[in-house]
Image 1 (cartoon, rainbow, N blue to C red):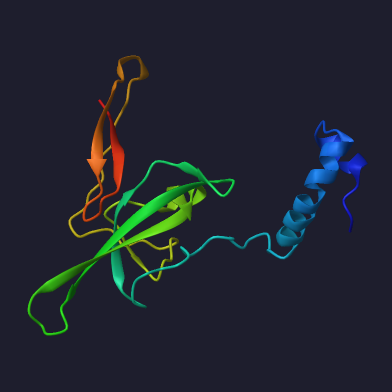
Image 2 (cartoon, one colour; image 1 turned 90 degrees about the vertical axis):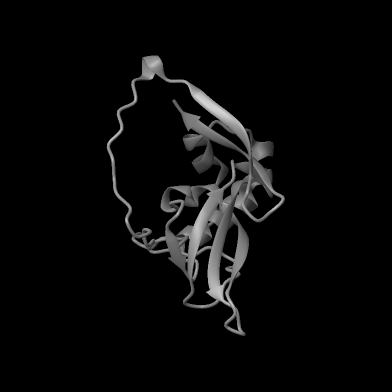
Length: 161
């Protein structure tokens, strides 16, 4: 079904010359949405998973959001400790994955993930939950520069006080 200018103008105030610029993008988006079932999630796994199949990998950090290719993205950092092939100690492998900012609510630092599946996380042993009340009239923030473990990547660590 083609997208008509009148249909778009009813939803958003848009000029006809702008409509012709965005029409192909809208048609692609609508075609994609028609191919996804209403109850199906479009993002279940992180793309370009650099670890072995079935390997349990720990999330160690996520970057602040940034613009990349007209989307808001984050870098997500994982690590895994595994036995060396010659059985002499352990080696640590780090992985950095570019992910859509929309995946952030499904990610928990220190939790483990398998095969890039963000719908299932495994909490570390001995973890507990605490309730925190933040009173908005007495909140301050603390920021400091941060170097992501095992990389040369830098970020800012932010905390509420």
